[in-house]
Image 1 (cartoon, rainbow, N blue to C red):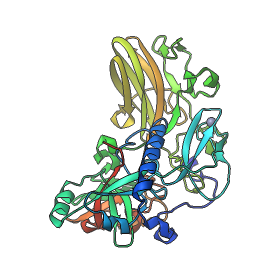
Image 2 (cartoon, rainbow, N blue to C red; image 1 turned 30 degrees about the horizontal axis):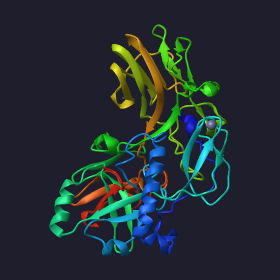
Image 3 (cartoon, rainbow, N blue to C red; image 1 turned 180 degrees about the horizontal axis):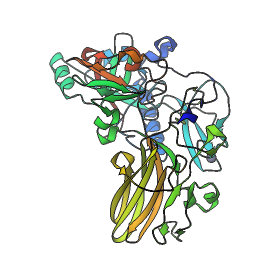
Image 4 (cartoon, protein in one colour; image 1 turned 90 degrees about the horizontal axis):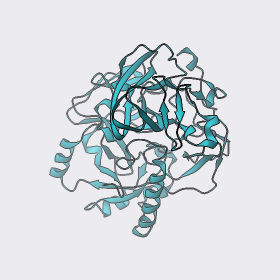
Length: 421
Ligand SMILES: [Zn+2]
């Protein structure tokens, strides 16, 4: 994609709150019991809200931020609650943030507090979004430390790729996701990070695979049909706000980029959260189509994706009333002439009669090196007690791409969202 080379966000400033030098003293204090109760419920409500726009493992995961050491020492036995600080694990867990909203599209989404008042563009239509003035509380996590050396060892044994852990030393803790464990080989394919030859999320458990929404099937809503990016002459809308295929025509998604004056475009690896971050965008190459299907008995859907310059397809069987989640990772090479970079997703009914609703496209988070990262380190073969950790906010996180692998002794405990099962 040569046209990606010069594409950048509007330059403002890099927003990296998890650099040690940028922290205020308050960043090192755990929230006290009274505040925890309030913040935890607020956090859960926000996270419930965000389920509308953030697909994936909202309740399991974790944030990359800086958390306190003082309270950590005082409450080691049962785990310590911390409020998230900083954006480095967004969109999974957030520090204090604001909410942007687009009246046209009806979406709202969290954005980083960047310290400037530059306009925020709707990630869907490119129009100017409203930004609420009040800050929303940070997510709250519990960090469960290792109580004894032997317990630590057994926990380390169990650590797997995709787990979220607190790391650090005496002066601060950070929260990151384990991307590679002892014995793994971390290498590069261009700027893409691979572990044992596979893209990094491949080794994660399903709940640790993170997706960022690209668009919605907004023509479910009468007032918003004009901004729909899904187009087909062969689909009809029912009175129940579901869509039914007449024949076997493709329903095609047409992408537009707010970074290219909302003109036709491929899907970029955009992070709507990172307001004010200047970086080079890359075409997304791992897409997911999800939605709801209703059929009388059984039916067959076919989804196709345009990724990495080629078309891949998946056949998906549905029965009765069900939700579907189709990933381009599971697709094989397909022949669909109408696909292109700016029409990267399409779906049709192959057999049976199916009604669809709630179609959403997301892109999986892709783990890449940034231009300023040290490319010469790779490949890295992890030693018997070494881990490679990353933040979920790939463009902004300070992690093993910067500071290298970490020894097992720096992993202080596991992290879970308060209220998660
Ligand atoms: Zn909009």
